Amino acid sequence: MTTVGLLYPGHSAEDDYPRLEMLFDSDIRLPLVHTDIGEDAHRVDALLEMGAAQRLADGVEELRMAGAESVVWACTSGSFVYGWDGAHEQARRLAMEAGLPASSTSFAFAHAVQALGARRVAVAATYPDDVAGYFAAFLKAAGIEVVSTRGSGIITAAEVGTWGRDEVLALAREGDHPDAQVLLLPDTALHTVAYLPELEEAVGKPVLTANQVTVWEGLRLVERHAWAPKLGTLFASRERA
Image (cartoon, rainbow, N blue to C red; front, side, top):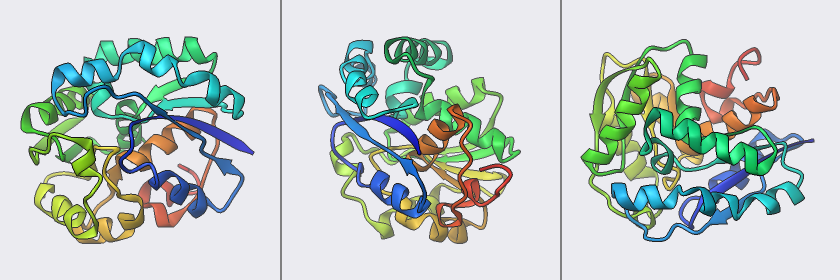
């Protein structure tokens, strides 16, 4: 059995993770602890507070008790808003607190793009434009070319969590760019796992979504390979999985 521990902010699209676990149809387990988010706002000051070290540390013991072999801060905006160096420090402190390899969804996106052998991406975000810009800057620091960035102006994760299939597909189509090799949907509050094959068919290229790459990153940390074609191109290769 492989156990990836997840620290998830608040309550929005956490049901994507049991769905991921089911679609793996294997001995992969994804215990999840909800962190206290403070103010639910896609605003820089609120996001910095959401990702504060103590908020993350508070959930670590429960994940250790659940047998976690790695820990991932399952939040994109609450990691990339710290910048490249700050997000590294956030992950380092989480690893020290947990005594386990640790990462965040922002690094998961960077590593997943690299694993696909891609260099150019488009970002289709639910965030306001200024917050989406922080994500683009983070990706650029990882050596990834961001050919377009689309924000949607949504302030709260709670609202993002209400989006269904039609809204998610529309976001992907509107946020794609012909020069992009991969499309990124970067909010863990957005339900995407049920729609991954449709998303890739809609834009004709690999699509990486936050909850998908979060789990992939946790598995990568413990060198566990997983093959699940229903979870998109990222999990469709037995060699890359």
